Image (cartoon, rainbow, N blue to C red; front, side, top):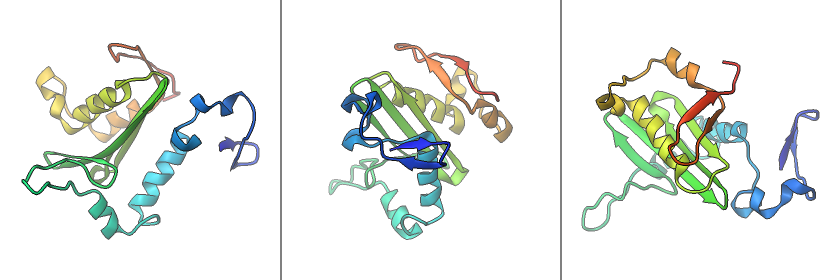
Length: 171
């Protein structure tokens, strides 16, 4: 599916260069940042599953020997101080993605890249460390809401060092 802005709806596209297998996610699913945010919002508002079931899904489970697996129902679960981070990533051919939800803080962000490998996850973890204040050892500080809004945008990263080059948004 692809969003058609003229018709203000998603439409299934079954032919053309954009339907090549390598250009879609697993299961040939198309998605946008807006779709992912709607999914996150729907989860938060209890429109997709109940808050009780969501809490269960976002609970890290322990093995019989007591080892915390830091994984819930299909999501990585991390607790950093008072911050609950719930996330998941994907990697297919030359694309990678990772998303973290800090729902107690009202924060959700997604890293999408057309580079394979762990780049999206590494960058997402760096952003999460910055948001939660874990990056303070390097002289950085936890940003306030106004600073986070300024970070919203589209960025270009290099393939190896994960350096942010430029914010291409209008903000």
